[in-house]
Length: 159
Image 1 (cartoon, helix red, strand yellow):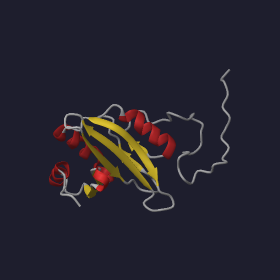
Image 2 (cartoon, one colour):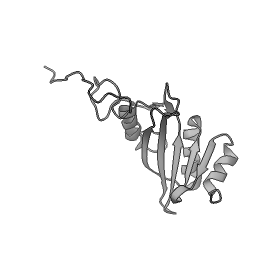
Image 3 (cartoon, one colour):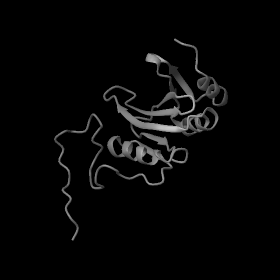
Image 4 (spheres, one colour):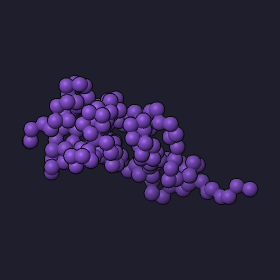
């Protein structure tokens, strides 16, 4: 494995319990971080290391494997053209992570999408509601245990 990258060392110094693991597999720098430290780690990376762009925020469902969910953040330092991936693992039964909407406004839409499709809640989000599906939709369709033949309530025009 390659030497630790500078951002990893800085995070370990400032938040010793925040980083659970790290790797540079296939050239991708990745930190696996504590679910409660997501906002703090992102703030340090943005303010002190120039990761000024949240490129994407998504989720992976590994059901039936445990831990089940992995929320993935892709950050970009535009000046250095450096990419960094963060992974946080929420609880399986009640998946909740802190919001990062105050750091990157685009997180508003990305967190809503992850909530809508996977059911991961983002604590402190200013407007966590469905973004792709209608409000009456039951469940979260990108979860691997979501039945493909499930019927949904029909919603028509309001008179």
